[in-house]
Image 1 (cartoon, rainbow, N blue to C red):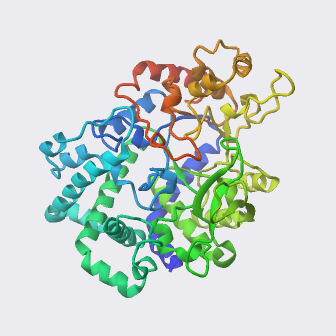
Image 2 (image 1 turned 180 degrees about the horizontal axis):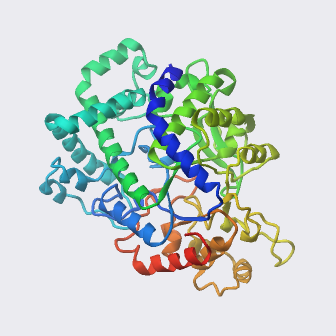
Image 3 (image 1 turned 60 degrees about the vertical axis):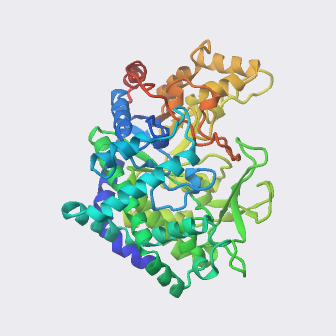
Amino acid sequence: MVVELIERIILKTVRIVKGNEILYNEIMKNERFSGILLHPTSLPGPYGIGDFGYEAYKFADFISSCSAKLWQILPLGPTGYGNSPYSARSTFAGNILLVSLDLLADKGLLSEKQLQGKPGFRDEAVDFALVESWKKNLLTDAAEKFLGSAAGEDAAEYKSFCTNNKNWLDDYALFTVATEKYNDSRWFLTWDHGLGYRNPDVLDRWRKDYSGKIEIQKILQYFFYEQWSALKQYVNRKGIRFIGDVPIFVAADSADTWVNIDLFKIDERGKFSAQSGVPPDFFSDTGQLWGTPVYDWDRKEEDILQWWLLRIRKALEQTDIVRIDHFRGLEAYWEVGVGEKTAVNGRWVKAPGKKLFDQIQRELGNIPIIAEDLGVMTPEVVELRDGFNLPGMKIFQFAFDRIGSGRLNAANDFLPHNYPENCVAYTGTHDNNTTLGWYQSLNEEDKDLVRRYLARSGDDISWSMMRQVMVSRAQYAIFPMQDLLSLGETCRMNTPSTVSSRNWSWRMLQGAADELTASRFREMVQLYGRD
């Protein structure tokens, strides 16, 4: 079944893959790039969450005025409990909360009166529950109006979208309707067994009984992809490329596992028998227990490889460069038993990463992929990364360990003077504190070490560290928007291994991305040959 789905969408992705091969060839010329990391939810705007509307286009203009060429985002999938884009309810569907209400109003699908009745949203953070409770009703209204009025070109484009995405869209729409019906996405726990474990007769009955609601969900996905496609075209016309993100695992309560349960490790009762995580690392002394199911490579290797190709193809539709999160898990991943409360007790399990990348090259050609290679690295992981010439990641905040009392370990791989050309260098990522927050958390001795390395006073620490990354040999230099704005710890995007309302909720204030900030960034880009 999975192989048939691959064959049905190959023609659709040929043009996209060719475009990414052209980009790959440009990268191979060893040009130097700079970019900004900002997830669309963090954009400003009046409706409680960033979206694909006017502020997204303004931010693209800002990136262009910075002379930057890259806009890095997080996964765009629909989030569930905890609001993490890395635990989306689908690896193929889009988060409809990113759909712009203003753009729907421009098409006559919503009225000004409907938009004026919004709650008192906070400007500096997303209240996901409040946004969802208000915005989903409006999105449904717009979808119902579209369903009753779409004709001509609009109707044809919608029909084409449904046909081109049939391999995931029908199942996801039914999954979402069932999630709302049961008020729970845990299909393996609370749904009727016949629906949860996909009895064909039960599925057919649901498709018939809930056909109207299913159609609404398909229209909402059409809104998402229509708006995202328009934004991406605008961004690309400005010479800017999107860096997307593919999580290595998928959520247990996702449409992905519901449709493809046989690809994951399950026990004799049909329940997941192992979970993912990472051992103790930079972020946590007890590791990170992600809790997502792990692939059953031994039993279903070929099907999993084909499914991964579907995921990469979808990522190439959405973005221009693909970052694979937790890349090392494609060589070996950390498997933890069900019931464990931390990730301390686990084991490394081999994965066929070389076969996967051989197949990607064979079927998709040379496409630009970034390997998120943080954490426990082994010679085998390095061989997999370097064997396919994939740039890894360097995080400046990880650089300041010591040899003896007060002496910097000058051989640390995360110090900019040690960066190779083929890497993506950051001050920090979405999982790090902001650079200012990180610096302020250090003791005085460590602060002094940072200042001595930078030969700066520390008064403008975010920009001092950005400058050092910019001047390095790294081909890519990318910075969280919070660092351009010199924001502190309260503005960090995520704290790993925690579930907090603060995670994933930070938003940039209106007008923060101004010309002064752009001119400072632009000067560094030009001085260090990244334009």
